[in-house]
Length: 161
Image 1 (cartoon, rainbow, N blue to C red):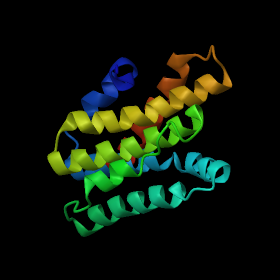
Image 2 (image 1 turned 45 degrees about the vertical axis):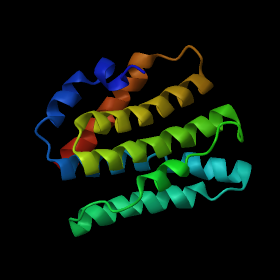
Image 3 (image 1 turned 135 degrees about the vertical axis):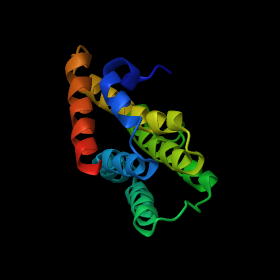
């Protein structure tokens, strides 16, 4: 999978180099949290409770940062929360799969300190933006959409730095 951030957010990625791990983690949590409504939609369609699961993981991340502690959650638990595409509609399932994978990669980044996992986490959110934009307009302007998302990331960056 190619990186949307490598293509549209090179300057943003350059700024991340000096950002401490805890602040990157905070930035990731804020950016990922924007996907909350996708879980509400999914829960309404399929009578699941994945919104609660998603919110619990976001809150867990906030608690980790607030208490300045390490992540002690079983990462297999996070991964197992990702719904199987065979059980749900392709599009709606892709939304929650990407969002939960973004949390999974963010937590793995915090545990391992591997920056490529942080970028992969953000890219999973951008994959959702891509899927959503395409579902609204199959000929959408990728440059405009992803430039706007990079602006959002830069705004979050300025608040957490």
